[in-house]
Image (tube, rainbow, N blue to C red):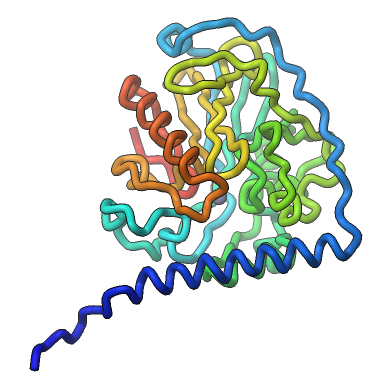
Length: 327
Ligand SMILES: [Zn+2]
């Protein structure tokens, strides 16, 4: 008789994972059917973001000319759950993640420009997560329940409260993508604050899960057809025309996910959004989950962000769901 106690039956993990994906897919289909039978949903009223003239340049030129902008991280809440759900669990580096149950953070970034004003990158979790159970749709709550993820916040942690305490009214929120944990906090901001995202990002399933997060806000799409190629990226936009805030098309996690580079005086900051969720994912190039919108594209986007960092190690990398590391 052999003593195999403590080892798991081979095949149990992949089968459980498959079941997990199956359950999530089933929930998505059921949710989509429910929404359609409820009369469909309104088309979003989205205008093209007025882009300044785009000039060809290089990362070397850009980073040699930092702008007088500052970036501050605003922590809006946390998500309890298994970090591996956003990663490819068959990746040989998955163990580098450490304890997968460490809560994930949900952050927004406040960018202050001395002449152009204040901007946010992502909006984090709404005030409703501090006491009222949040502002996710039933469909999103169902999916999160299936993967065992629970979001929470505390009084005053939402972006609106944090900005008000600083006397700041942002002009716009540049969103990395249209997933609830990045859009939720929009609802607490005044109706004048615009929401900006990549063209094509507002795909059916994305909208189905957002609920009222975009309601009442001026909405703008970034047209990456106007973009220049800035290797390793095919499409990069200078958002304010002075080289201070750059939008980088990094699709995969969602249809047109956007990462941002803020060319700050104190040092350039790369805000990856969910193109890279965790520092260990960035360091060990852990593949994103096959459950993302387009895994191949997501792998290429992550590789691009890594390549940029390898060329310019002075970049401070801010990943999607973990606090920034000290320089
Ligand atoms: Zn996220």
